[in-house]
Image (cartoon, rainbow, N blue to C red):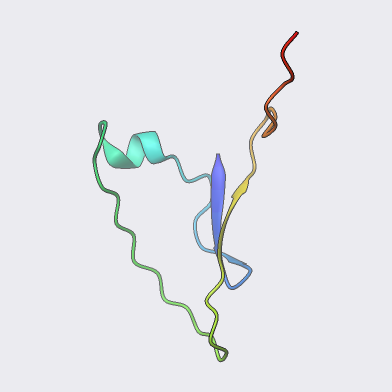
Length: 59
């Protein structure tokens, strides 16, 4: 499951969009506070689960 990071700080562990959205085509809105002093806000979803993030080659 992805773990969202804002400014390289973990803001939610094991975020599960399927549980949060409660259905298909549903919006999920989360509010987090972040402090930044440059013009760029870094938001990253990092996969922390089992498996791969690569598409296998056809065989």
